[in-house]
Image (tube, rainbow, N blue to C red; front, side, top):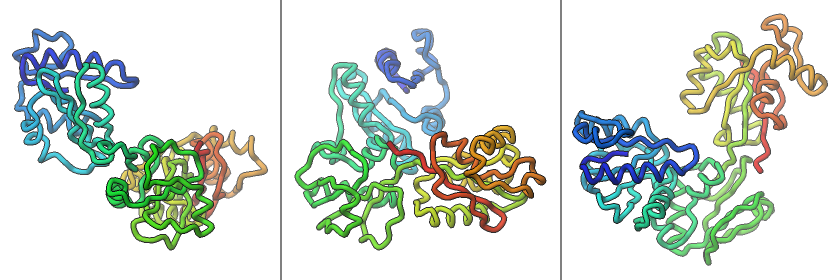
Length: 353
């Protein structure tokens, strides 16, 4: 949160107190150094404002700017990158008359933040996204609420526009979604699509399964409930691991977009190929000790692939299956240990509900 005047700094204290009511939220108020003695908890800054904003834009998930909207535009325009990664930005005037959602209204949560602060301050939220103005659901908001990955992301804009323009849109899903009603939006079982139902318009498929032959513009919303266990030889390249994982997911009939975590044995966490692949894909990588892996084999001895050769090499009878199950307690293997070149892969799927 940034304020640049004395009145704005006082409003910033009220806003910080309001943000403290949001679970798991820590608010920091930045004020000019010349006002620092008036605010015990604020952090003073004396660097140029563009330099401060450049750092905050990278380090924070949300920014509350208490200043003129035009100033914010000029400060942040050079920093904009992607709506999937840019932080939420909300702007308040110095009297707190309006709380304006400026950037990342849906995915970043700026619209929700603006509404919350307006309610706390007893003022008005300014929301301009078309779906919100018309009281319609937005598919990027739906994805955020249910932790779904959007594939392809470019289709989201088209589907949201179709709703606003009154064009027919059908959602096919195998779980119950709380979707606001709309005359041109229908929600149907996924089985209806799989049996050949004609959508007669735009289509949204809520499923982790691979479905081929869909018409252009179809949006998939993928549950992030897959954990991929990986075993590999020392020195294997990131490209080899990527190719193996992609092939394994195709064999499991699941989309790559649904992978939330990669898992392996802890002494492979320093493998450059694994590290590089995880960083390139933006997926967390975790590891488990030999003792943890061996405990899984003892508990599920009859259900896992065990190799005496692997045990002689690394001290456990396998990596990919137990690592996947350790990373996803309660999950089931939908692809058992599969050897693909110098890589072994197993895929565990958690209950979406």
